[in-house]
Image 1 (cartoon, rainbow, N blue to C red):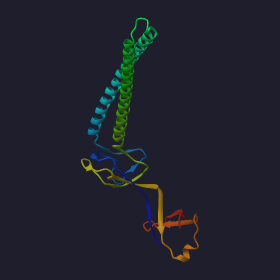
Image 2 (cartoon, helix red, strand yellow):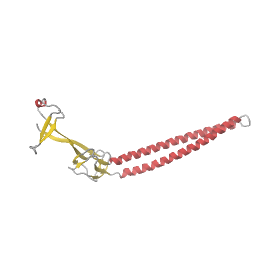
Image 3 (cartoon, one colour):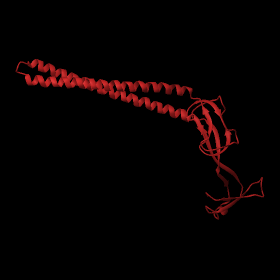
Image 4 (tube, helix red, strand yellow):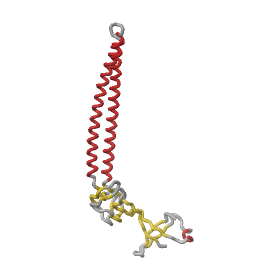
Length: 220
């Protein structure tokens, strides 16, 4: 039977939109897995990451300030509670009920202030996490702007050139996996019934009729 020899194709595409800085291999070149094949401009993303790092530093400073504020509020509350106990023990011995109630109110106010400070610390810590997450996200985008060959193979098509502005998902290079070459052959039903998966096969190229390429049946 006659068929066409083909290889598995892998399309390397952009993950994010951007301008192409360079495309390294030419059509027909052999590339190795992990080899850099193209770069996308990331100046805007790097600027965003710098801003995110500044926000992270500010958020960390806010955490330190909030922690100091909590320490101060805890001291105030401790003093207020001590004054309440002192006034309570002296009620009826020269200390008025009004002064006792006033000190209780002061202690409640100190407790409320402490709760507010703790909430401020929680908010500052959330800002730290958000800023760090943004830095991580932008760092991944910068890393993904360097396109690398996912496998070894030969470049079949070079689909983009330096200077082009590509949208997300645009193909840049098509690579043929020369380790996975196959041939699809269409046979009469009577012949197919005689073949089994794993059976030996031979391929003869029209251009090289004297060479026999060993193969095996992988799918029927």
